[in-house]
Length: 382
Image (tube, rainbow, N blue to C red; front, side):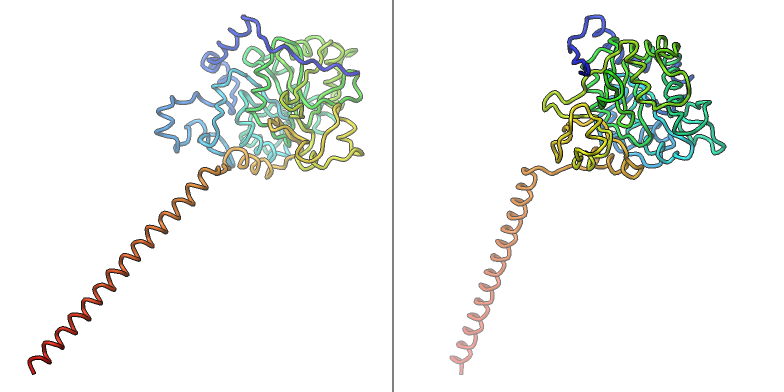
């Protein structure tokens, strides 16, 4: 039986005050963030009046970034520096996959409080992306080395600036608003982690690396200081399946997973594959056998408050960005109003045409009558 915690929503007074003060964290930590040269940091938003006056003008900071395609902030309400949830995103990538990293940077990565890619040095450079260079050899087996490197960096340099640390892949797509809402209900000083729970291999299960997993600030502190430093508790070598190894480390130091399922409908919010795969999942697939709570098919597969999907191509990330943030639906009121407007215009036009026709007919009749009268007068004279 795997233990998954359902955490208490009540915060202590101290944590509530901590979250309140976090609203102004960017101003207070400005010099530190600048020193780390984090291009993913977004300057504070202008007040509402200025936003309304200049909503079509790009933010100076945004325009200076190395975006390939980037949807303007006017299309979504989420403002990273206004959220009391401070999230560091660590995204695994490699030099050959810089287009995938670029797509993350252009889309959901821009809504992380802090964003870093974990890769190795390349002669081609980092393409303007915020990259942490892991010294281990670049191959799939060494993803565990990258992951440890990223969490160690977070502990050493950023833990006083963030509440949560997320590890994701460069083909993960994250809906940041829904993630922030879920994390807002939990205490970052409580050691735990969230994600798509796989009930295999590790005694208490582990979280899928593909859909991304999130450690609380306290969990990061414990895994770095207690697990990473002890090879009997946590794998010390560079190689290893990173999500499994992280699950083992956390289990061995008593950090238990918490549920991230949609509380309203008890549906999944983190997905280790893309939407269509989830909708059509078969009970013979690896996804079905790994997920601790077996998935439903069709539209019941996924929560309306979904947080992440995996195996998303760069093109898919831009498409998803458009579908979530720019595409809008007209409601029935708009449709009815447009129909009524068209009918009224038609009736008005028809009425004008009818009146015009009647006027023409009247004038024609008058002319005929006048002509008849003239002929009669002419005949009388003769």
